[in-house]
Length: 210
Image (cartoon, rainbow, N blue to C red):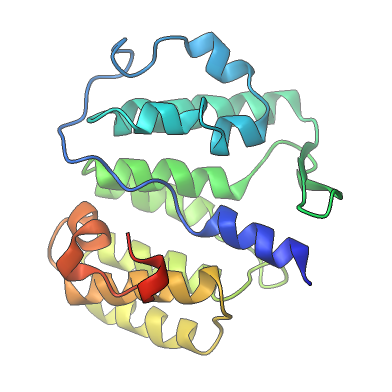
């Protein structure tokens, strides 16, 4: 079994679905009660643990506070410059990054800013999550470019990215992300939050529906 591919599938499938509420201002204690504790978590606990960023996202209206946490946590990783390690399901240690620079964190931050309505800021962050051809798997770069095209109102570029991605997807997170692009096409012209999460826009495989 390809543990790495399966593990990355869970990681890249996207973050939590946005809550239906207006964003609360950065620093509001309703969103972040102990910022220092969150910043002290290791990467996996911060990004995937119940007491990490997900605890912030579980509170309605805290998308921007969570996005700012992603920004600052990623900046701290880069400043330390140390390897960021995770443990695969088979027990193997695998480096997410050798230097603290992690393109997936630009994606996570960008999605939250897109959910909050900052299309320009999100598109810029999405661009930083693009990978080289050697490490882009299952149409990741096409998924990113299609998402950027949606945010910039370019339906032709979105559809072109979708068609290119269709020839590269593999079972797992790839076909889920292809379904996301199909949803963005189906609900083109609506907000990213609606096109990504509204039931009538959902085109993900049935087992992956939100």
